[in-house]
Image 1 (cartoon, rainbow, N blue to C red):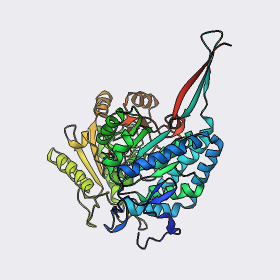
Image 2: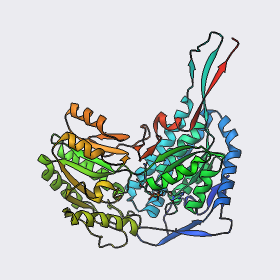
Image 3: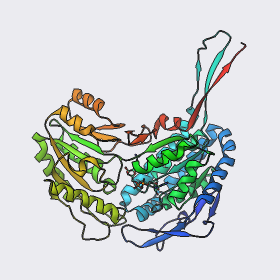
Image 4: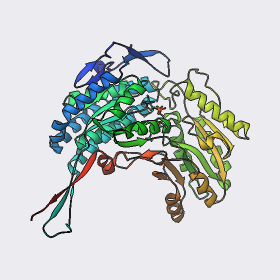
Length: 486
Ligand code: NAD
């Protein structure tokens, strides 16, 4: 990364990390990584494939018994050291993240710090993976349940949160005594490789945490079909998740999937409208709308629709678009032109069907993949924005007046990741929160993820939970020991 002002330039690694070594691809092939704000090439990574992945899996396999036998408190100490190093190096890690991904530096730093919190959390939680004794159904028997690491785990991760999505998987896996092979997205690999560098410095043994870079299908096929791998944790789109799940079927792997969303954001007539607008800005425009839990459909009660729309437009006008590395920028570029074209397509479709753009709606004058944050009113169920994840800075406002119809509309999607509701009526809050078919419900908040909660979706948004004690359970097998002849 030419000219990147890192305090510690060694954090910028352009090789893969396998078995404690920094490696090129077998044939030396590389792939370029581009800064989405400047469109300049910032470096390369090895274009690895199946053979290198197989060796990484073998390394993880060789390291697993020793790591699994290491006392939980000693694993915790190493993870804690990893956490400390991430926190100490947060400025550099944030700059690397912004340079490869585009989000504003403040958001990147917040991702690095909140991502590190998963490692800190699991460093502690690893000591509390308690088993159980069960009253035996026979007088001469005793039954004890123990929990053991799943074994070698694979992680395939996307570009939108290139640091947090890895730490939330790796923290849980390593704390549980599993070893891991991670394949980060090819457009945001440097955050993953910097984490590997810090894992090495923390003293995490070779083979425990490996990062391979390169061809998605080829690496993915090896990770999902190699019998040594016992669990796949994938975060990304529902389409790819479905395919990887099918590939895992051959060897009956455990599968955790964090997939797409289509989050409803509901504003009732009794809501604090200013708070709802704040929540909407955070939920919709963080990471320029490229968040799986980000609000996709805004349902606003008819009696407060115009007020909410006007206040939201006002706030949107205050957002500052630009290169995330510049001071004061609050919205960066989309990851690429293809992502921008999807936003344009959703706007054009909505406008053709009666939607009206109140602010934004166009490519930004900065060029590249910069797009104007957009608010659109008169959205309807027959528009693409109602059915598909836009994954960009578009807030479509749907009008409702009946709670029952609203719930039916909110649930009328194959996705079930997050939902948000703003209301001050406690009975309504419980009623609606229980009726919404999502894994997470935010009440009077626009952001709700952290290391202490079970993050994850239902329906076609996935399975498994990350964070909290549920998160570590996903990396543990349950075994019962039946003792006879007492
Ligand atoms: P994607 O599914 O295209 O890619 C995700 C990762 O999988 C990338 O690293 C990609 O290179 C890799 N990949 C693609 N095809 C593959 C294949 N055939 N085999 C193996 N690997 C393959 O998704 P994306 O566009 O990078 O990310 C955006 C999507 O991720 C959105 O749908 C978003 O909602 C979802 N997402 C979900 C969560 C969550 O926690 N539920 C979090 C972030 C993003």
